Image 1 (cartoon, helix red, strand yellow):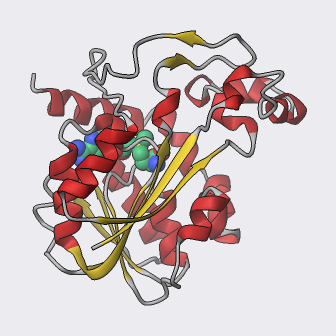
Image 2 (image 1 turned 60 degrees about the vertical axis):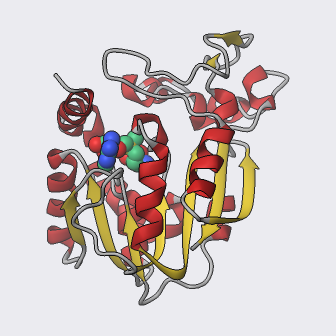
Image 3 (image 1 turned 90 degrees about the vertical axis):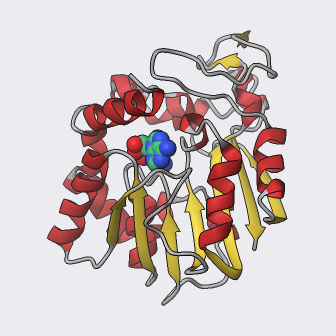
Length: 262
Ligand SMILES: C[S@@+](CC[C@H](N)C(=O)[O-])C[C@H]1O[C@@H](n2cnc3c(N)ncnc32)[C@H](O)[C@@H]1O
């Protein structure tokens, strides 16, 4: 089977298994009550200017929390994901809420149904780059669909975390060298370096304007959500993960945000 089909099939399965928790009434009510809660505060501060009335595209939209938040902030949003189930499950929520959002089943490296020069703002959130085998194709298409002076903003795991086994409160162990970018595993993933991401943006004629390297402001970064580990921990335990003296991994930035303009 082609690696893209393996990724797509896996996400179609995960959409109806461990991803259900991102679509509960409680999860959606939290976004409605506070759209900003979807974003890391530093990334949220980089969403500027005001997006009300603006065209926003979210490729690899996954749980669609950012899509819902942008809609609630007044933007006209298009959500794209390669997995039909992810698109279908998000569109069911939007329909139930009466939210006018466009959903497309699309590969972020192609965006073939997305018109050129249409969007004021393109956003990719955590866990996008790991599934992308050709960053230049992804960024060339993000550049293509942006209007002139349109903004791209990314938020993702900082590549400095990639060589390490992420285990809360344990000494850091190396799993692979920073230079090994993959693919890794049966469902193929990539561990791109900072230079891979930035050079792909530069090669696609995006002008990088601002970079932030952030810490996980609550300890959830180290909690394995796919195993419900978080349910077993007290709030204090989770919060203690942000202290690098207790949790050595907290000494290295966990998140990376880059803002670029066409
Ligand atoms: C971890 S989610 C990232 C989005 C969001 N931050 C979240 O946590 O749900 C990864 C999403 O990327 C999608 N995906 C993987 N490869 C893709 C591709 N080439 N084009 C579009 N979507 C892709 C998957 O189907 C999945 O919904």
